[in-house]
Image (cartoon, rainbow, N blue to C red; front, side):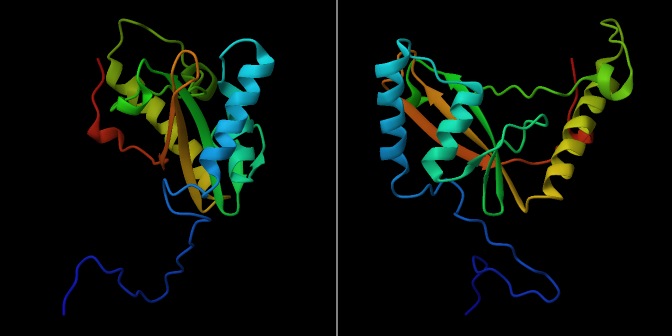
Length: 179
């Protein structure tokens, strides 16, 4: 019987299976994250978790290795997966259906030696930003078979959080326009 849902068997293609499926965190992940949050709230004095602190917490929760990176895409490692860890605030994390993520280190001045002209056509500049992003993603994918972004959606007081991850991909500049 034909079933298009099945994974086809291919010749000359090596499939590299990730340490775990996308968004299928280890079974003890929620408990470890809860412990980390309780500890943080009890000792820090302020409900704040972001940046490198979130990267380190995530690494401990999955038994990964925290490796702060100047590229910013491979801060946490586990087996053949590398993660970039992001955090965003939300009034209601469990109901949040969209988040806005910011990717740094896409400087036209650094990468191309270009000064920004706010009156210039934004499309070539946007394409250059995506080219920087895409080259960064490609460089990390040469080292790690799987590249993901993990996002902590957190309430202001850290009493409610949601965590999800997605594959970190390259973006085709031809599919975007800039204003």
